[in-house]
Image (cartoon, rainbow, N blue to C red; front, side):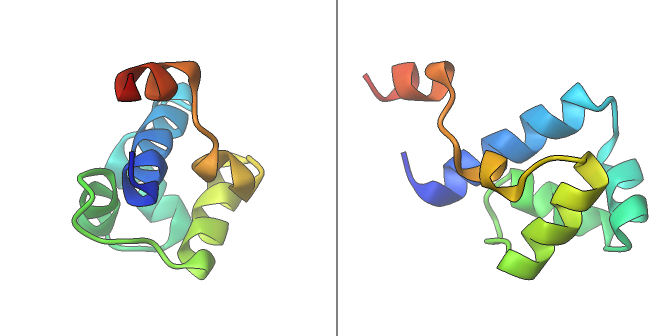
Amino acid sequence: MRLREIVARNLRRLRHAKGLSQEELADRAEINRNYVGMLEREQHAATIDMLEKLAIVLDIDPVAFFERTERQSADED
């Protein structure tokens, strides 16, 4: 699994865990709503600065975007 896909899946999972829509997350991070969707669909790769902004809003350690979940590891098998 590519790193961009891992980040995209984690962003979606973490956003859902906080009960936020893409629009709410984007608004709180002061970014374009469409950009969040593009990140989650792997159409764009987030910069470190963008991941930092998103992590602040999601109240997580930015490293969480790069961690493989058990499900992601199983998807590779």
